[in-house]
Amino acid sequence: MIKKQFVVIGLGRFGSTICKELFLQGHEVLAIDQLPENIHKVSKYASHVVVADAIDEDALNSLGLRNFDHAIIAIGEKIQPSILCTLILKEMGIKKVWVKAQNEQHEKVLEKIGADRVIHPEKEMGIRIANQLNSERIIDYIELSKEYSIIELVASNKVSSQTIENLDIRAKYGCTLLAIKNGEDINISPSSKDTIYEGDILIVMGQNNDLKRFEVQGL
View 1 (spheres, helix red, strand yellow):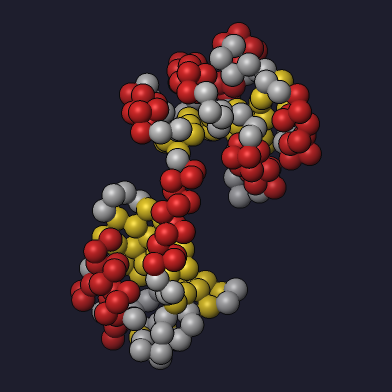
View 2: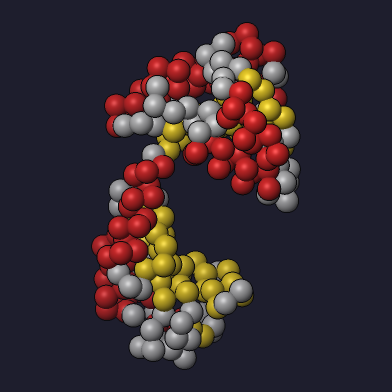
């Protein structure tokens, strides 16, 4: 794994979780928040911790943030600091700046000022959970765009012991089978001769209507 450098600004529940997971994955993480108590909570899960104001350009410059690969701005409910911090980091030349948005208006502003990705944690999690609740077969759901998604589906006995070639998922449903999971084993980019068994987890990508058709008719 290539070790990367991340800076996480804003250490509420969302920011602190990202900080901890990136650190546990072996990356270098600089955690920044203006509240010492938030810094204390993540001190064990960050390479460096700093108490600083997210819109203090001089303070951010002094930390050498321009050398970091990726910045995550996870500032809480205040929209203005989030926007100003995004502007500062983009002007510094940080390659990728991901920002947590509070609402659609906030998202539009962030996109206009150059945020590389806008994140809606509650919205994205809500969509995933709603899709899991909608079908007993859906294990997980990732929205790629308004029209395309990736889903994990449980194979039924209807498709058990059939090869991918026989099922012909792409031709019949317009979907792409990305991988097959069986317990701890995962088959990435399975071949046409590979066999699917009941209980296997199928990771499938496609247009939402096609995915639904595959779920209802194919499985």
